[in-house]
Length: 341
Length: 245
Image 1 (cartoon, each protein chain N blue to C red):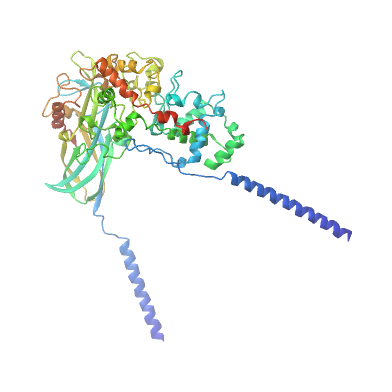
Image 2: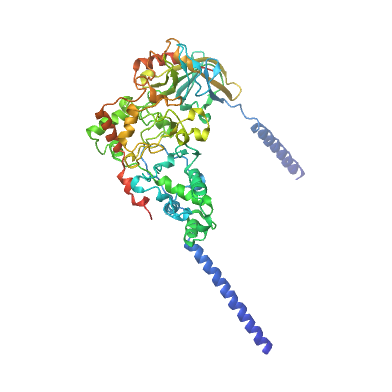
């Protein structure tokens, strides 16, 4: 009888243990359900005169969860080891650039195939983000893995339990693709929703004809051709002024730099790769009278009769600047969905 | 009963033979009445294959020049047998001579035949030469011809440097666009498409752009053609014999 009683007690303990075991297991399942993998499609919105954004990797399809995660990372100094985040040098109010550092603006980069002034990173936004995460920030991924919040969010966005640098770069790339500037006064004019003023219209004609010849490199839409050009700011090259040559070693690339977008150009002073021009007026004056010849200068810059500049009048220069300012996109600059979450 | 079984067996044997023959036939299909022609562009300065950015070439007028950019469209391709047009493609092909991924194109569903002539427009036929009529790609957008200058697309961008009479390095930009300046290229060449797919080299001799019939001299003609109708007409006339197969 005593033996049987002991047996019953043991059996009770076993059943109790099994109950706890399953209860715990159930808890785990519940926890998994809090952060299920979720892929809510995110559709980019841009006008017909923008190229189709066709370089999105198949394994990084846009989703609301991923873009939200990228946005959070953009503003989080957890990416760096010195307290800085992407947003430390890229202010939304300055079109995601920063005047004091002459940082390149983060505008419409989803269409780019080469990144940085000399284009040393080629590929997709994922590739430049890989450079930023692995090399520029040297991100300590273990810090992200130590964060329960990030673990949950990466699980939700990428269905991974262990975060790697790949998911970090992919999430950042997603946010960058959403940073689309398309609502400037020029866009409203192009969509027949508003008119340009007289000086702006004259400036548009200068920009878009042989008189100013800006359109050949700053193609309408993105206002960049995504190619490299030597626009005659130097005739003797050294250091960073050698531009793409520093990456390719090809003499024909001496002094060539990536064509920057002109969207929000009013907000992204100073100008050129080294910030040598402080105002748009100085930039226009360069094209007007300051072009320096060299063997690699872009042929468009030295056409007959305009070998040393456009030779615009003061009024024409002013009109051109007025047009450039129509590319300021206040919707982009103030879009709350781009701001710190 | 025995006869019935024998008849059934005979029927099955015949049926098997029919199936066997029909299967054999399916393994030997009728010859494909169509073929494919693959083209790859090679760019020359007379007999020499082009080296980019090399200021070592001379045109007919004696201008020393180099080439930095060569981009163009090919459209409205037709194949002829004698004087009879046998095949037309409605496709538009964008060529960037400097980008190895953009120097080739293919024509599909060409009827098996021997062709003696190929014709194409260097640029876009008028129905396609309208702003934003081509798929919105970065290349197409970069080839746009501004609306206020007529709209549509550049047919050709051919750029480089030359030394002027004082040996100063200047730029040239031979740009064609606008329907009135659309060159028609006609090449007499045998294309044997009788026995399947074939590949061809489309040769573009850039020196022919500057001669025949007009000797184009950068020192006296416009080195940038875009806003000059006479210059565009001269280049249009010259370029018609710049291609060979």
